[in-house]
Image (cartoon, rainbow, N blue to C red; front, side, top):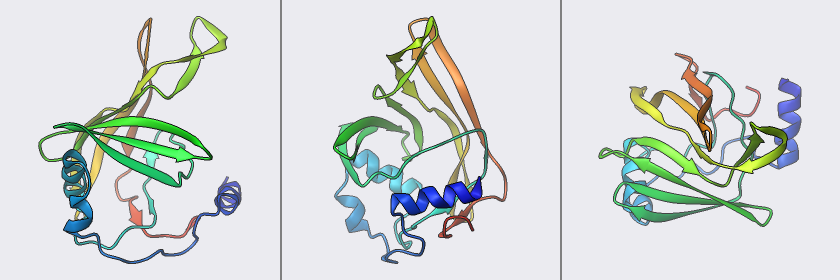
Length: 177
């Protein structure tokens, strides 16, 4: 599986070494919607060099692809929208944060799942990833746990639960290290 991962990283054109080590400034953060500012401050990124990678072991499953273009928009006092564009296709999601800026939930309707009544069909459904809490670790914030939930006409279906593995978080490592 490790070799396959490295092939996929190479195919995606991702960097295999550190990117610019610019420090994230208050000015960088101030340009974003206020809830996004709270989020980035809660995650303690201001004053740190920009991370170019991280690794955290979870029990569970998570998969993503690189996305070259990200835009941020204000939604309300406690939420911001993120739009990701890749190869001409844009998907959006809403991040809800608490008064500290800690993410409480991510929600989108730009996801499709197998229809539980007819697995040969896919259906568009709201998808959320609530986080129950955060804990500091080595000067950063780490989720206590999280879930992935489909909100289907038949009712919510929690299909994934995530629990970080203590001691597994590392930053700025090349893929496969």
